[in-house]
Amino acid sequence: KWKVESSLLTESAEKELYEAIINTQHGTQNTVNEALSIVETLIPAINNFFDTVLVMDEDEAIRNNRLALVGKIASLTDGIADLSHLEGF
Image 1: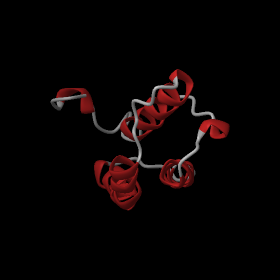
Image 2: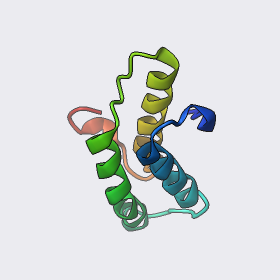
Image 3: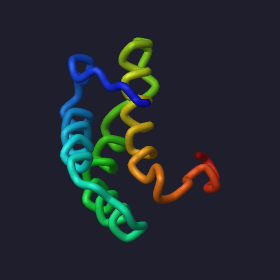
Image 4: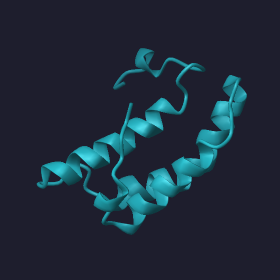
């Protein structure tokens, strides 16, 4: 659903977040608690990403790639929790 091109990752924070997300996708989460535990491990990388990376880059390819990375974060709870009920999703 969200295709991230690793070759377009230019900032260390986005590379770190991408690797962290890839590593979490190897596990299977079947419950809300398992999903939250996985997301909780990503908090430092997520915070670093949003603190240091401009998602809405002028370069359209980089911007879309970063938006896909954000989409991957949101999709980690697919099938477990429907984040669309939260404001902003």
